[in-house]
Length: 338
Image (cartoon, rainbow, N blue to C red; front, side):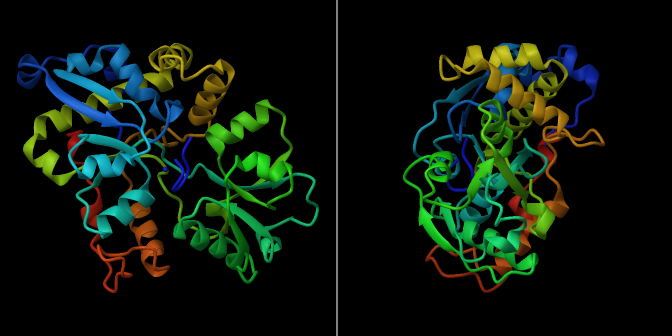
């Protein structure tokens, strides 16, 4: 599952997740064609899409939705260039691409809280807290965000934030196992669960425990152009997608099976899929403790934007660090829920 450069809103009631949606005037028309691009091969972050497809929630909403196969081209790039109408991405991607002038906007928060972790081998007795990572070797994936993230975590724990960085050409876990790196990053709700199933002895630091803004890690993005030209189709898609994610929370076993079937052989580890979905639900990643799903949190968006701006991560179209802080309120919308 993608993380950062590797891989990176829901308000219906329980009744709406289980009863057929009324066919609106829009739904009664010829089905609208909608394309959504994935950020990685199918996984539990995508489960609501596959459930909505299999349960005919998109059809009920008057849509003909095509889930595009994953490619090496970033989903945000596909959206900004009109190849896809929607795309799965992360907030870092939306911030950096929009700052550089791309037409991309967050419209739905799949994951409500941070799933990323700093990980290292459990046997490392010399690593007890983030400041112990000073001077050690980090296995990374080549983004400026990673260096800002890790340095901030270490400094906020009283360290200097100085590390050695190598770009991984192999799996993160393999690099840890062979000792070529001291620590790396993982997506806890997929890679972390897989490591637990394989009984890998690892320890973790959660970003937000050390002063890094919590983020809604996985988003659906669209573009201002698409939303302006297709307002009804955009709303229908987001609301039917929410219905799919909410159904997944309420019917995890069935939904896991639907994801596996819809992935056309891409998901062979059934135990991983079901364990990952269980953690996404139990850990309130798909729905907050107060019952919110899908909705983009303005406070989290602003805090993350401020962090990225302060650390010089946001560049303009010429690759120059932004001098003036953007209006981060234009980087997202919750208007498609109503």
